[in-house]
Image (cartoon, rainbow, N blue to C red; front, side, top):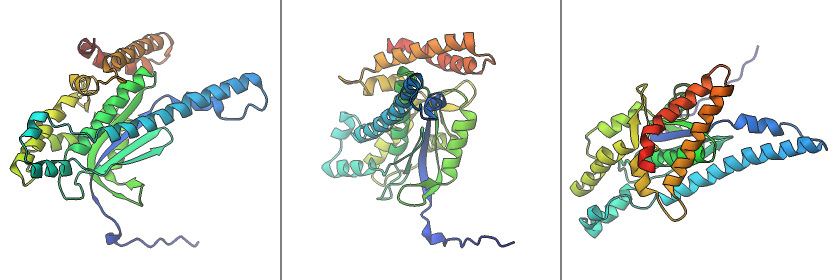
Length: 302
């Protein structure tokens, strides 16, 4: 029996480096997809169901695709305080803006989104901005999704990977993020993998410039711990109801407190609904865990 011979590419064809990888999966889309799995063929009732399922699934995916893209565009603004920036010379400010630059890629497969960026930018600087940006995007996505009655689940990590072409990303980092999201998260939450925690806890020099290094160390050591938390089962997760997000995301068009209250109302209603209808108790248990995480934090969002 003849086989297929695949000649491996040489090692220099690949650029393997450390990437920050985040995977987000919109939950509950299968029930909407099932409504338009076949054409209604003139049946009025089926046509209404078909259109309803099409709207509820496609509109949702498009909304989050556009939301994530807009969020990452907005997050390019500076997150260093005016006091810190005022202490820098023009030359140091130029270095700082270089450090906050990173190359982000967004991939989408069905209702799953993948964000990835090298931890080292094109200048060779190790910067926490990809981590901060992805955690912030995940937190914003979690809160908004729940307010819109759509749960999501995800994971974020650092690890090795490579681009197979201009877009597709592949490697151990993506495999770990997928494993954590699909096997470990269990209920609507975003797991922060151990390599992220190790990065935060490491006391390493990230810039040869003393003042710049102090700012980056402050961001890594003080800011990032504010937006993650240790869950009851020992997993670190994105703390999407951290008071930090209440302070930095408010605008005329975006009221985080109102969104948080809508999200909590949805989760509470789901707990009550699944308590009455969930035969095996799995969904009731999962949404109860989410509510238990949210309840003590809601006082800060009133």
